[in-house]
Image (cartoon, rainbow, N blue to C red; front, side):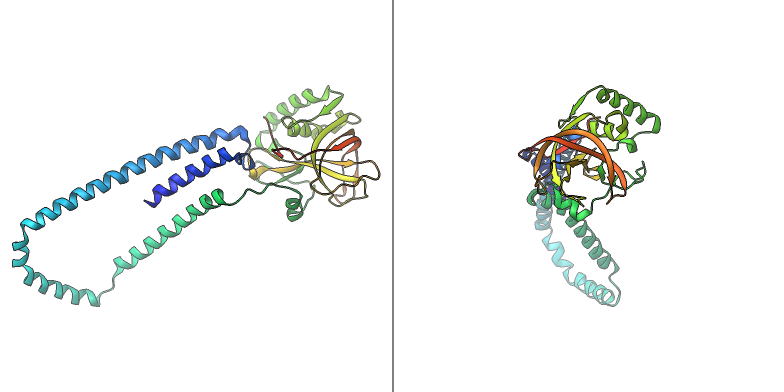
Length: 313
């Protein structure tokens, strides 16, 4: 019966995530069909398990009724042998009393093992249903520590959280990624102004970071939340969006260092729309040269209903 509840619990949890609109906080919605398939499969398994349990209970009930009838017709036989059985049971009891109960010991451990496995399966169901989903913000960056090192991303290590630059090369072979990168470069390089929306934010940033020489001096604009980081002065802030390549395992915080006009006063998690001219400079905390957007215009905006962006392949 517990297995029936677990199957139903997982199906209900995934369905509830779809209804609440929380699924996009875990995966790129491009792959939402996977969770839909899981809901259908779990529901089918739930129905089969319910039918199996129902049939078993009916069979056990019929067997018990049959056993009761047989017991009623043969009571006199049981009485005739009662004394002999009692003596035999006494002998067996004396014998078993001195021997170890290995079967009972193994049975106890088997039940305990099943109990622990059920608990581990119930934990994600309960947390998924009753714990609120935390939206990622600057506090996550503070906790994890923000840096922009030359991380060795590889196909064997795709789970690292990424920073600043979206990098999908880990999901392709060298030749395959070059074709995609060249195609996306052609999509953006011919434009004098690059105003990234939610759909092309990650794709556009990846093209810019891969080929910065093709975009220097051009106007770039996008939305994001402010993160102070290790400011080199009071005019430089990072502007970020959290983005999912496939799911939370390869998520990252993507954006640029922005040089705002003097006198700008921003706080972490303020949402802004910013546009300006693309440049680069040495960022001392990272000890490397990174892209910098020299803002010519910016304004405060409300946080979007979906603060995340997703990679469209």
